[in-house]
Amino acid sequence: AQSVSQHNHHVILSEAASLELGCNYSYGGTVNLFWYVQYPGQHLQLLLKYFSGDPLVKGIKGFEAEFIKSKFSFNLRKPSVQWSDTAEYFCAVFGGGKLIFGQGTELSVKP
Amino acid sequence: DTAVSQTPKYLVTQMGNDKSIKCEQNLGHDTMYWYKQDSKKFLKIMFSYNNKELIINETVPNRFSPKSPDKAHLNLHINSLELGDSAVYFCASRPPGPGPEAFFGQGTRLTVV
Image 1 (cartoon, chains in turn yellow, green):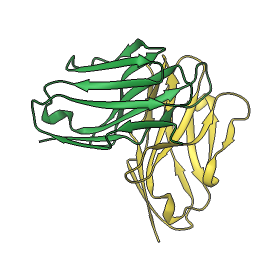
Image 2 (image 1 turned 60 degrees about the vertical axis):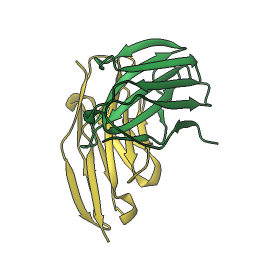
Image 3 (image 1 turned 90 degrees about the vertical axis):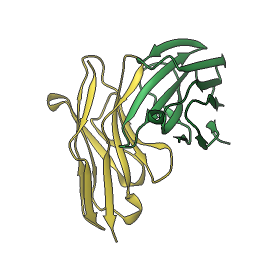
Image 4 (image 1 turned 135 degrees about the horizontal axis):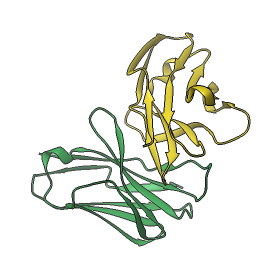
């Protein structure tokens, strides 16, 4: 069965710190991976996605993610976080006609 | 222009009542979804429709009945509301094929008292 696992439940960082959020997936078909962000009280917005091509994908707001097939991973990174990055982050895989989400990681950035 | 819009944004109701949430997308997508986000922020798919046809029903209680009058609309009707139905419900739509992302509505926060 398809599944997504996010390693960190809650991450607390100071501004300008570097960020890496872990994501591992389990899916036997063609991989279609996403990172979504949910700012407090808002809907989900796409940060970036991977379907094919360069395994290092760049998204909005300085985020990037690397698809490592051998590790079944799609970790999200940002070199320097800002207070405005405080949000919930979701990794997802598309499979079986639906988006399957990880448990989410709450990121709190202290000013 | 809002791509995926849901109404209402907030819904407070008593146990046992019946309520509906409406969703409309103006993106021309064939596929629409309902997701439930619980108090721990976990997102779980409930239903998927493709061109008005039910594709996915993820063991949701039959008190929940989706209806798609056309491919731009997917409404969710809930009968005999229970306390455990309190959650945020998100509608989403997606174009066909591999690759594209799903677009989400603003969510409806349902509180059952």
